[in-house]
Length: 348
Image 1 (cartoon, rainbow, N blue to C red):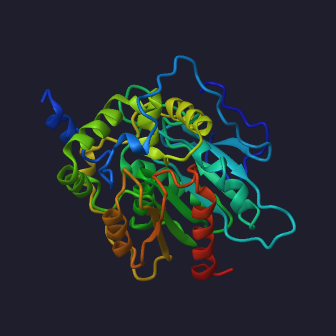
Image 2: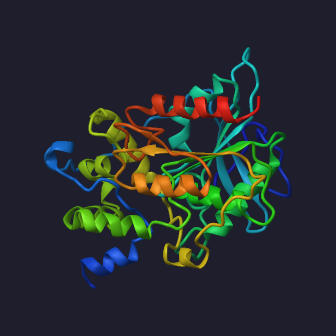
């Protein structure tokens, strides 16, 4: 993190310089997850867990992906930005800015979706939030930033682009994106896409639904998030983020990336109650796309429907799809669904 440099000029305008038991655990983490389908049976994963001593091979972004750093002068930090320019020879469309969720970073977007959308005319940018990925880690704190501060960073980046972007947020990154759209002085956006996003009221209602469906499964997922067990336990990593048919090699690679992504907690989950719910978008706000997977163990279909109602739209529910739509087995089908929505709802 000390070695922050620009091998190339940044692909954006830059402003400024550079109870002691299970129930108490559930209460603490009630905003950190909320699995949608409550059956965590062995039939959905390989039997037993896979413990790894050495790191699996990590996927690397293609040569066309550039990494640069976006300054946040007010706090003296720089954020990692991965970017890929739109392919030549295709009609230029609005740029896309991607925001990750907990335990992820910019890499989760450049793995598959950058190539897909760049080939269709979009400049693609993915931000690693404060303390995540290769972004600077704030000193002397246990939490990277507040929801509002993360939204400030994303707002500044979106405003630095020449053209209003399509803002895409996943999981808690979706909550950040909602905050960006509905703040007092929002940046101009072409559209907002919420992918398996935490709803505007937070995760509390989803957690309560999940507890009612399967208490034991809830404890299992709670353990995974409290202890970060999905960083070393492949079965738990699959249950939390991926489909049962994602190849084991891909699962292990992504598990390694997840293990390296979070240098400090993304958000103080208890503090979210002070800023939620996110107010509904104004009538003149950009169109909103809401999509997620029916097999998502973190954001359930009811959560998608709540977010869709907030955005005055209908949720796109992908069959046989888990939480990490942009990395999972059917990532291309999810990307095509978003592309089709933009073709209909976003002006060329």
